[in-house]
Image 1: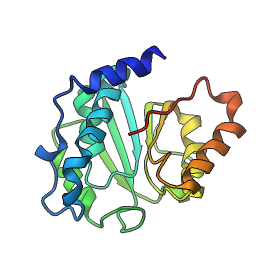
Image 2: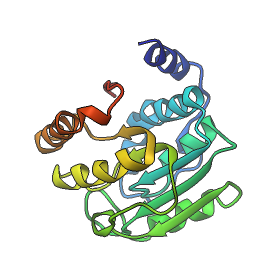
Image 3: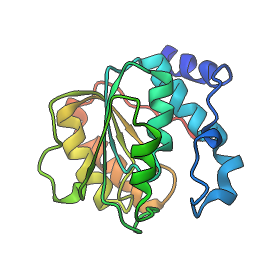
Image 4: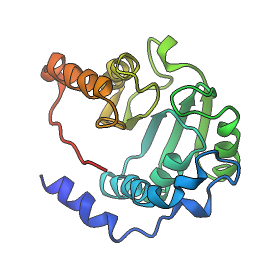
Length: 186
């Protein structure tokens, strides 16, 4: 797909390095060096797709938010996080994200996406599903995202068997509303 080729080409050109804005209190800081390419990919995705509106489920410290807004600086961003220690979260991390992105069009909501029947707002150009990656949680978030997102980016597709199977089941059951599907490992 030409779009995937453009994204992969853009990764090598992007200057985004999330370590410059990373929280020194992040308990996962020992993994920062291995995450550089991961966040560069997110910046490249936003550079190629040029979304004007972004919704993200699972904010944590806001590194993905910063990457997306680096790639598409004029975009508006809404991040939803349950601000807990479940599924890779860190309580209070969203405060870092708020502070770090205070000069951007970024809004943050503390909520559990699993309790929502609809995401706040209308239709988004890009929805990033990166919250409760236990299969069922991802499936629920995808059910909402497909109704409100022009493009839905799923994180953690290859991380666990449960998540992999849930995403595949979702794609199978909702194939009539999915225009295209692809995977970029990384």
